[in-house]
Image (cartoon, rainbow, N blue to C red; front, side, top):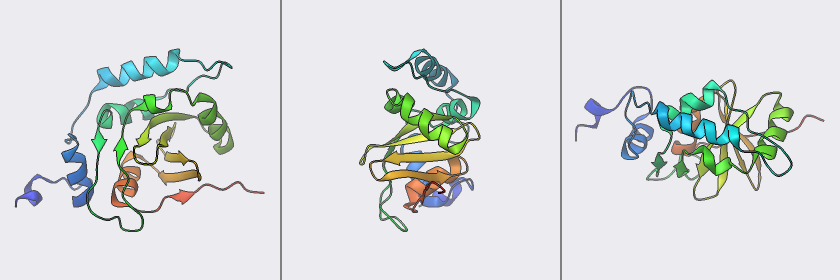
Length: 165
């Protein structure tokens, strides 16, 4: 097996393998699809008038990882690894939810994709930090897309967001 010759040093071997199996390669950049998603999100308004924030950190994450169906194999380090679909349209109808959480975090949030097994929504903020929102709460997955993908694919437990009383 020649995995060492083909793996990058950007991600650990298991994370790199899961990303490559999904079709990712270093240098992948589909800005045209990212712009389609950006236009779709910008033009959508909820019935109550809530709109999505779209910013460079989101567009860059979509350009590199958008469209990937990531299905990690094996067991996770702390929890089960997350199967992911990087497609912001999973959050199209959640502009209010993302807006509310963004205000609570003093930032703006944009949809990134979903955990396909649990239907948790992945979101990214204007600084590039990644969050996951599910029926159990809101979670911090990492300070950037690389850390978040590593957390989710390697089965590391994300940090629960709590409100300060």
